Amino acid sequence: MTATCPAPSTAPDPAPAAAFPIADTACRVVSNEPVNAEYRLLLAEAGPAALTAEAGQFFQLKCPPTTLDRPFLRRPMSVYRIDRQNGQIGFLYKVTGKGTRGLSTLVPGDTLEAIGPLGLGFTLPAGTRHVLLVARGVGLATLTPLVQMARAAGAEVTAILSARNPAMVMSRDELAAQGARVIEVTDTAGDSDMAQVEALLRRLHAEQPFDFAATCGSNRLLQLTKALSAEWQIAGQAAMEAFMGCGMGMCYACVLPVTAPSGETIFKRVCREGPVFSIEEVQSW
Ligand SMILES: Cc1cc2nc3c(=O)[nH]c(=O)nc-3n(C[C@H](O)[C@H](O)[C@H](O)COP(=O)(O)OP(=O)(O)OC[C@H]3O[C@@H](n4cnc5c(N)ncnc54)[C@H](O)[C@@H]3O)c2cc1C
Ligand code: FES
Image 1 (spheres, rainbow, N blue to C red):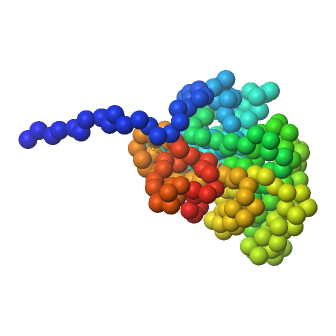
Image 2 (cartoon, rainbow, N blue to C red):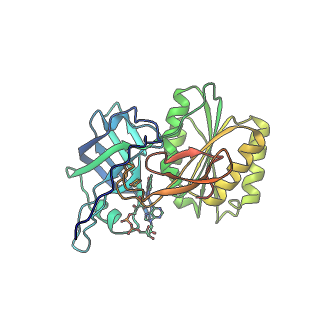
Image 3 (spheres, rainbow, N blue to C red):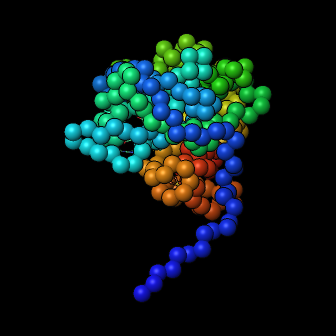
């Protein structure tokens, strides 16, 4: 019996063509240190292609095998630091499973294989003056380079960092050093529930109106930011996650339901049409 392969699709790829170089770079690890009980910061030397990364883009990292695990697929990781002056990129990652356990074994001088930059990052509308960042957990890693981008565009940034407790609030120094106003809310302090965060955002908006909002890392914060952006009629974007296979648009492992302008639900690839989407179209984190 013979099997027939379907003819390759000739339909155009709906995502905009990547306007930046993508490379598989062998990066020399500079450091890989814990920042708290769950997260580590991995810094590596990067080539010119990797250094074109923009806020919200990601890399597919090859995770080294350990005595216990042999991770097959690469793991997606947002770029956390883009240090073009010193030729380094950084990743802030949570050790969750076999891939990230492998990453945690890298030591200075080792090689980190990183494909990227991948996906579509954040886009600030021209003339943006005040950016609101709302992040929790891993969202802090993804949103941090947006401060660099916003400040370079002349905008002020207010970052709301939500976490279980103060030890889990990452990036506060990095964000403040880049010129963001940083406000922490934590479960232990009792000020991270949605009613209090909403009151805080409304007060901040009344003091100095936001004209762009970005969020990542929590479904409840996404719904709140989405509702307020609509009410205030400001642009917003959300960085999303999905389990990935190829990370490059080919396997459709990462599709996410989103709302089309017509109101119908359609599916988009997080790795190709995302990971950053307009806040109106995303449905849940
Ligand atoms: C575009 C993108 C950017 C990301 N950026 C970061 C980042 O900056 N820092 C960071 O720590 N993580 C980030 N992640 C998540 C990271 O890719 C996963 O934590 C990682 O793949 C887990 O691999 P693992 O083998 O260690 O764990 P696995 O053994 O695969 O999984 C361990 C646990 O993590 C959960 N998990 C795994 N992958 C995901 C995912 N994509 N979304 C939600 N839960 C998941 C699983 O359900 C499981 O409970 C990002 C994911 C995407 C898609
Ligand atoms: S991970 Fe393969 S298409 Fe997105």
